[in-house]
Image 1: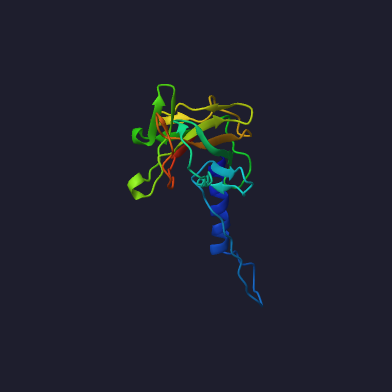
Image 2: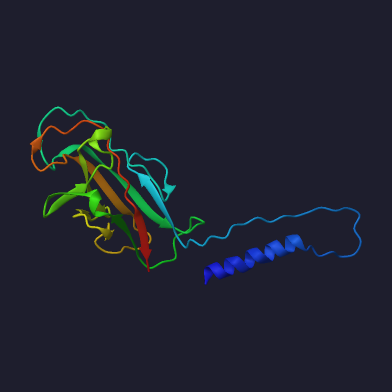
Length: 203
């Protein structure tokens, strides 16, 4: 296994640094140190956004923008422009992840989901209107650059891509604000914030 090999190499280097071998007499002395890191994480999730910001590991804020609320619109109608993040999988040393396939799952709870009807829903705002929140929600698409689909949100683990993909393939999370009502209203002005827990699965 590759991580057993890495561990034995690092231990050997550290032992050499702690117990230097001396050959005969010396007129000078010095020291040589080795540093390294052991990771229990087989692969790292890197998340880049649609504005070109550099990828970060594990956490990314997806900023959907600021818009004026002045016209009545049908519940579920789009507000503004959609944004997305691109997720890739690498080893801790940034080399390709040694897996056959992978996917990403959202882990939503029931109180995070707003249903427009039985075939359409979105992620609720976690900031209450009483606390300055808007009643807008966020609709989500998931998949790859070649196959991106609107998701009917579910509780528990829900895969972003309809099928697992190769480790060299990116997975997208695309989102847009929508009117979070089931009628025709002017969206309540305010801030929107929600956290979407993600988990990576691979074979």
